[in-house]
Image (tube, rainbow, N blue to C red; front, side):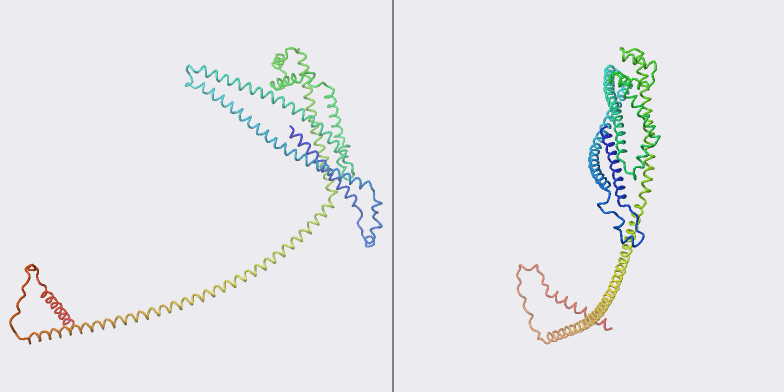
Length: 464
């Protein structure tokens, strides 16, 4: 509720600030308004047309100063209300969270009750403990019902307080609108105010509203009943959907045994008339708001027509600014394209230089590979020549060795044949310990002779 009050106050202050700003702009435009010079003579002598500051009307300057002061105060007040509205938004958020928690707890309690009733309906719950379980479920149901009844009573009281607060706020806002209309006094921007004050439909609606307010003031509050009794009466009527049936009268008689049926009927009649007046009042207020909205839209259209020269000047200024921005962008694009062309030229030159370096490098690699192949072929040729010379040398030395061996054998044979024959040499007495050892001296000699003979046979076969 406090959040709604703060919000409406903030909207009202914002509206007052906007109207003050418009009036201040109108005053400034009237002070600046004069006919434009059409000739050079008029342009050369502006002092002859415009009054001096001392001759200017002092009321306009005083009015402008007063509007400036009021505008500053309204702006400061609007800032304070905006801060208050921010605080109230947080409070509203907390209230929404509390409402959500309450709804969750309500549905959780209903779910528990349904689950308990379903458990009683199952065959497994039949037995000696079924009676105790039923009593527990009944106690839970009674406690839940009592809690929800208390919550309903509390919410009903809060609803009535909220409705009363909204009604008082509506009266306050109507008075604020009257103050706002009294503030709009300048002819340039008073078209909507004059329309509000002189419009016959608005005057008729205002008269009807005043008549309804007079009736409400003359009648006693709550129809002469106490506030608590009236709230209980309203709650019973709402239970029966606002219909005064026989059951409703029976319930009222049971609730209020001290009152007669005629008193109850009179209060029902008064409440019906009161509700009809409230509905009529809401309808009149809705029509009044619609009419004010229509007149306000007309006023805004007139204001737009009055501000057409200012808009044209702003449009020309914006067009000139767009032209300068467009020229600057075109110059920037040309400079960027020129720099991009230079960059592409540099990149192409760098690419050509890189290709030339790559060609020189490939040429050097080919020359190096060709020199390496030539060197390798030369080394192979020299190696082959050395191998062939070594093979011929080996062949010659083998023949020489064979010839030397044959010559030595021939010389040894001749020497043995030339030796005189004498007594055979006496054998050396051998140690009996070495009787089992066989001498291999002659075996080695025979094997050597066999090797020599084999080599001779091979050479003969080669020569043949």
